[in-house]
Length: 220
Ligand SMILES: [Zn+2]
Image 1 (cartoon, rainbow, N blue to C red):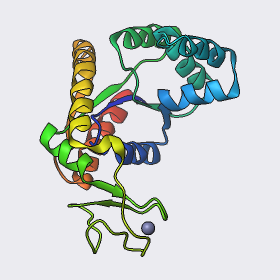
Image 2 (image 1 turned 90 degrees about the vertical axis):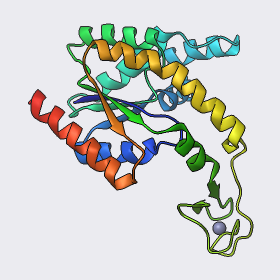
Image 3 (image 1 turned 30 degrees about the vertical axis):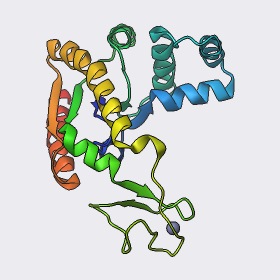
């Protein structure tokens, strides 16, 4: 089963991705992670990507897709993959389709996790963490016993610099601008499944599971 997982910042995609990976035995493929690793290992693809980045250019779509396909080929007979944060552009989506067809594979489902912007803002802006012990909090959903203080006695909690209302609004807007054309592209292929992410984490998990069980049954 090959899955593309789309979801805005603050939608809880990390948690749900982990559930999908664990439940269906899929491999998690994040283009950001893979790009970082190829560069740090100094592979041919990594060096080529580094060259573009050094000259202030974006890494071209076909190069990103080549890295992802290399990763897929290296995994052999795994039961499948979840693409996370990939593809980001129509160009990448088209290159991916081409490469998949050449490899005799196809994308089985595009999960589109949908969350209202106001809820995303609340979730992201409320995130706090303790830099000393690593504990994570949310001012509303996982509040510390004393406001802005770590329960483990470490002192004041901190907030990521890019988790403020203004940057979050910008990140969400950028996500919509980037993702809407992708959803349209995959809709034309008829394999988008939208999942309501406005509900509790375990309910989102249940919806995702019912979608994926159906896909799994269909491709068997
Ligand atoms: Zn702490």
